[in-house]
Image (cartoon, rainbow, N blue to C red; front, side, top):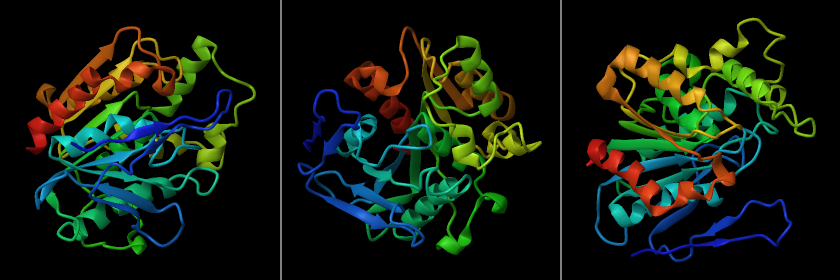
Length: 298
């Protein structure tokens, strides 16, 4: 049984708690999957026993597109995969302060291609990849799957162009997908913070209202095809950061294109968003995501 702990910052600090992974014996840390930025690194964690190849869960962290990292507390939702027979990968990507969209999406897809190309080296099963993420990470997991094989959403100069960035199953925790609908809902709830940076402009380099059609190219709902993998969507009913209309929009689109059996959705009554809601990392909720992955990857 592998173990880990969470290092919490001093009381009153705005720093994000970080997971101490020293208790996990078999791991590869800070593996570069591309060479454009120091941010393009990932961590690979393996089960304590066995030579694989292991089904693999690829986790993408959230953080409103502007903060977060591959070892912060969000990873608690995925790291227990090593005790359930999975290799677990946590991907770092460029944040909006460093590179505008779609560069971070290119990072996520380059990481998946890298893992598939190097699967035998790291004891991964390239035919059994799943992806998951929370909040902005849920967005990147879904958008990467929705645009798989679409050259307009790839930067093959990052390497391994002959390998697909596909996955066989997805889990999204409180993800955001339709930014225009998101902005309308947040405005309706009246929870905008004038002290927060303009994420829209930081992420895209322009306000969505300034360039007609800009948001079309950020919205995975426009790119979902029958090849989209099965997905499990979890969202809190009391989420005012990313209102749960986002979950309903994605569920409706996947059901329309792929069929009702292709999507499962659970709205968690009374749950808030991400770090505001510690119940997301309770064992009973972690079990739900892995039960879905077990169905599709084992």
